[in-house]
Length: 414
Ligand SMILES: NC(=O)c1ccc[n+]([C@@H]2O[C@H](COP(=O)([O-])OP(=O)(O)OC[C@H]3O[C@@H](n4cnc5c(N)ncnc54)[C@H](O)[C@@H]3O)[C@@H](O)[C@H]2O)c1
Image (tube, rainbow, N blue to C red; front, top):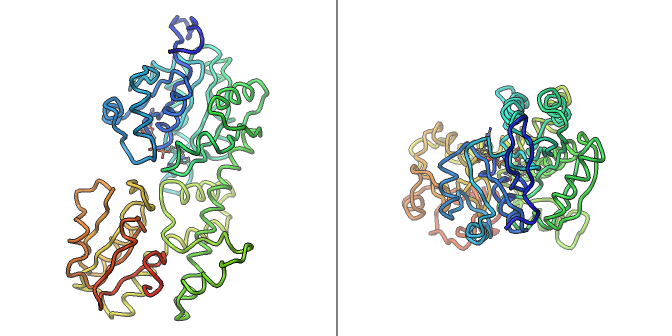
């Protein structure tokens, strides 16, 4: 099962069996679990450490706690091999030479990074780390975090190597992308870099070496760039809509057989647990002088209110209007509702007095209703997220259908 001979290691006076190749801290999460499964499928013995015991129980039953293409099959195939060990006890990190940290890194109430997240984890893990362990940060972090963690660790647990290897997968495509996307390896010394390259080399993807801060910025720039592109798309949509033209026609005219504009995305909700908060992490790094990032945030976060205002202009008032809202996940073919702008739209519509019925084929939320109930008797149907299940829908004549995505056909608009 184990591809190297088990080695006895000292963990600050405690002698334990180092029989795990890697422990993933936050290993039950959207990033941590696909990564753990992919390492296990590559032949490594993997410890999944997560504080969420209910999630660990589901994983232990061979059940994925969230949608991720190909992951449940992988989970079912690696569980019987014994190469996946699940634990809610931090002591498991003492049994591995490699520890990867992929806990969530939300922004705080000031839209800045919460540095204490890593301080707490370091304080918890440091006394338990095996001597000479490599610790890899994989969460998306505020620039300078890896250096800060390395300094803090050096005070508590000397001789630990530290690297920053950001996760760059798109949720839902992790299993495929983990072995195909190049892996950025941010390290400030060659020893840590070589170890991190060897670890991620096991996944078969090539590695790209940078310093830790370069890697931290590369990850934040990547997400912010994507967020800005969506903001441009949404701003163009609003300008065209205000001008009274069909934006689908405009977009087709821009993109069709014109390579220089082929990367202009379609408009739609730019939401989820990463793009907004990472753009704000970058803004905090600029002492809050980041006009392009803040503008992108205003445009993307403003789209739900724009839709409500446009409908209010059309109807005078939305009071008592029945509205069916289709799609509550933050993006198509996902069950993840984190920071979904459909929920923001639902709230704004309710404030405007509408009777909103929400539906989604994937999101587990007891407040949601079946698709037919959301559509039945609705005065207005709004496409929140273009799940495939909605693409072929046909609505009775006279039904007002709002589709900023342009996913339901050219004749339907805001
Ligand atoms: N979701 C994505 O598509 C994606 C893509 C790239 C990068 N990222 C980044 O990866 C990081 C994790 O995101 P996520 O979406 O996987 O979050 P998540 O909330 O799905 O997963 C985090 C996991 O960590 C566990 N956890 C929290 N604190 C812990 C602790 N102290 N010890 C052990 N386990 C703990 C939680 O129970 C949870 O299962 C974030 O920094 C995010 O920005 C996410």
